[in-house]
Amino acid sequence: MSEWTEERIEQLKKLHAAGHSASQIAAMMGGVSRNGVIGKIHRLRLPTMAKPRASAKPRAIKMPVRKAAAVPVKAKATPVVPPRDLPRDIESVARPSPVLKRIMDADWDGRHECRWPVEGEKEQTRFCCHPVSGESSYCEYHRRAARGEGTKSERKVAPMPIKRVA
Image (tube, rainbow, N blue to C red; front, side, top):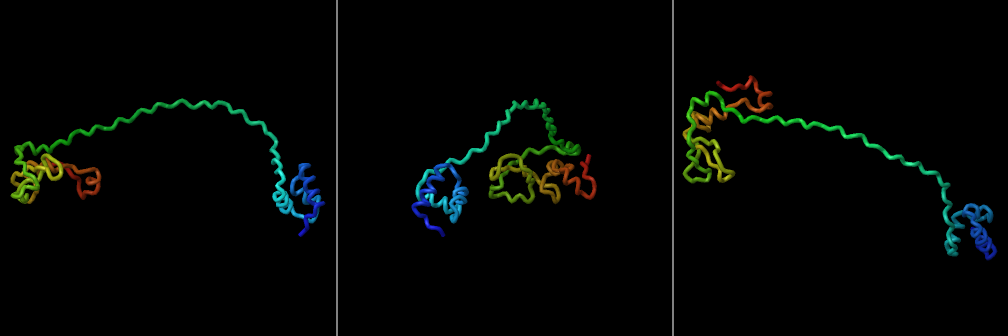
């Protein structure tokens, strides 16, 4: 490690003022590293040299970019789902006028009465309540109304085609 004598410090100040880099100063003085020169410049609080600017390259002139015209896209019409037709054989059974009982009615157990929801939401739902047909949960009219082709996925997995009884 070299000592920084008064002569070496003066030499460092002159070389630094002349605009030499720390690497160049270290090579000219000998016996000191580039980092040693940087450290001494910092401790002496000498003004830092401006970093050399890169040679100015001409900037590319930006040409205005024309955007492609938007291609009009016709919106596909969503298919209108017609209201579900009731099976033809339902016409042979008269539509019952609902008795309209709620689930919360204390005297209704719903086991032998049609559970077809007629109106209302949640606790306020009212049911048909006519006598059920056989083992069904619905009266004859609503049992026939409940039969249908099924959804697409139901028809896909059915062992045989699901068809309405006409």
